[in-house]
Amino acid sequence: MYADALIPQIGIGELVSVVDSVTVPAGSALQGALPQTTAPAIRECLECSADTLAARDFRKVFLMQPELVFMEALAKRDFRGQLYVCLANDLDERDAERVSRNVPAGLDISFVREGTYPRDFSPRTDALVAFGIARAPGAWLPETEARLANYYADFTGEKILVDLSCGTTAERPLRWNSLDLSRCFTQIFF
Image (tube, rainbow, N blue to C red; front, side, top):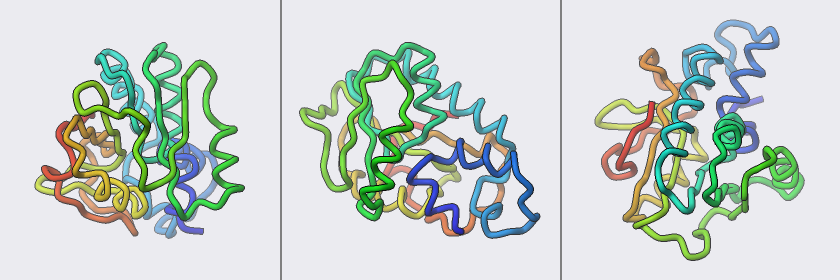
């Protein structure tokens, strides 16, 4: 199974935790499709980024994928904005339903299908958030999320890339796409 089939359902942080908890042969396709760092390092990165985001005054935050660890971290930080999560068009209804059942309590979450914006989404008060690896002048994102980040790149407000490499990844994970960092993102959170 390819990781890119699971990432749009549970996110990178959760998938790396699952891979760390079971025996996955070194060099396997699943292992090669994830950032080359540890699950605790990625969890720490997601939690620090959630701290930074929660401290900002965003009314609405639009996640490019369901990143469960990040959403849990926002819930722990009592995030009061509205959270929108983009569901890729290639997720079938059963998978989309599973995603909606996995959201943490305490957040105001709505789901938006790929190709639409949340209602009344404003560049002045709202932000897009994607999860990948920043490697100037580019960024590496899972295939589906790269497609979404490219689609929403014309948004004129804050476009945040949460860099999950923790400063350690030198190679692009398998099946991740390269994007122009400056076109798709205005900020990088570590």
